[in-house]
Amino acid sequence: MVRTRRTGRGHAPKGGKGAAAATAAVAVLALTAVTAGCEPQAAVSTPSAPAPAPTSGRPTDDAKPGAAGPGTATPSASASAKPSAPPKSTPAPDPQGTVLMASGAQGEQVRELQARLRQTGHFGRSPTGYYGTVTVAAVQSFQGKRGLSRTGRADTLTWQKLLGMTHEPTAAELNPPTTRPVAKPDKRCLTGRVICISKNSRSLSWMIDGKVLSSMDVRFGSQYTPTREGTFSVYWKSRHHVSTIYDSPMPYAMFFSGGQAVHYSSDFAARGYNGASHGCVNVRDEGKIASLFAQVRDGDKVVVYG
Image 1 (cartoon, helix red, strand yellow):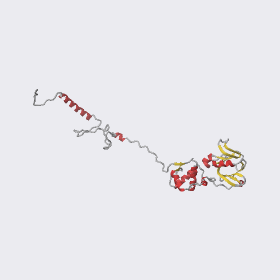
Image 2 (cartoon, rainbow, N blue to C red):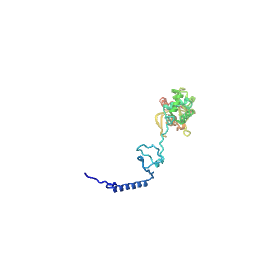
Image 3 (tube, one colour):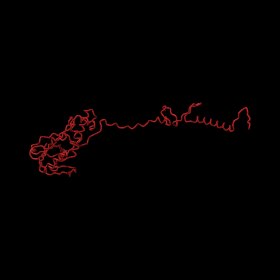
């Protein structure tokens, strides 16, 4: 066997000088890391536990404990200081609901709306089926009395309140003879077949032997193009007539004096008495003028009076 010599002191293993040099280099690097950081770090002599891995590039002062879970980046101080963009607001729904009818609408539902408003005293005329300025004002009046927003539009809530206060309109309420009171007929209208037209009441009555068969609203010419007064007769009927002077449609035209005729006017139906004709007698109810056109014959009398 081989014997080893014992000595009174131990000796370093081979390569001891290299290990000492490596230890010194590590110390220098550690010192350099502490002094070269972007922000000063607190020196710890002997950590009792491993330091947690940083959650972002630099520590923050306003992060709440536990706000960031494992592996979640904590926002930096500079990022948190920037004001965030306000969230996009969603428009609040109209508290009175969906708009069902509004200015410019026309049809049977508008006629029912007008008839029901008339039952409550807010619509002072007979239904026309057209949602114009008069109907807007009537709806506003009704809404104001019921504590609703005075929009002038027939929305869901306004309609429900109106239904609850009124009964279903009768046929006579929906389609009265005329929207205006019919004037007492001129004595010239009491015999024969006559289109009897009153400028004062702005109404037309179709009469046979003194009996009124139908009545309708009419509109006349302006002061610059007045409708002639007197006794005339129908000399020509033209169902799809178009004015050769003004290039405007004149459906159901019944000519009685020169170029003046009784005919349907879409402008009258839309604007009411805010406008005027060029001398003709305008009718705004197409159904009524169509019925009249079918009954009137050439030679029937036309009386226009003040």
